[in-house]
Image (cartoon, rainbow, N blue to C red; front, top):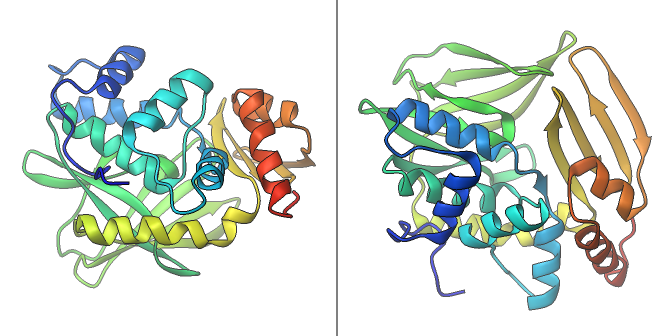
Length: 273
């Protein structure tokens, strides 16, 4: 693991070329359009820990998946990654397209530096991007002003509450009258070492014990934790169970062999959905 997955991409990055061709990104487009199109394209990649579990299982320890691996695996078998690998891959794409972008970290209720996102500078001003929470249009940060921004998605609303003169941004989700605090962004670029330490720590999290997948499909959010599956729309939540690899693969657009191998890895660890 000697390569830095946050390093600026090489001019001849095969991953960047493949991603740009697949999603028809045009480097000559205006910066804001380019950033939005790249983030929207990245929302096609599912959040999933199956590839993380498999690489961790093969290498018997911390095993980061770099941008090239994430992009190549998506094009080959429909996989994505967890927040750190997805953020590093989007950072690779944005920088490769000539944009100034930096990773940031966020705290969840269960620990510091347990989520991440990106800042991208447009017209000299930092903007927030987080494909995992569907902040796909670069959201201008208000500097030291305390205010609330609302970002509607297909199935909920995101509330971003800027506090302490811009030193933290609380992200809340609101649906059917209920509001939940999800995390708090620290809107300053993270040092590479700090980001990579947080990434490595994620291999010891609880979520490494069971399948965890989410993606947006047809305006609905699909979510699987263990065998518990839910489809969330703007007005309803449908719940069921998914145990079979073929059913999980079909729901999340993954190659069935990937799911089978990951379920087998969980089984070898003594974990079952």
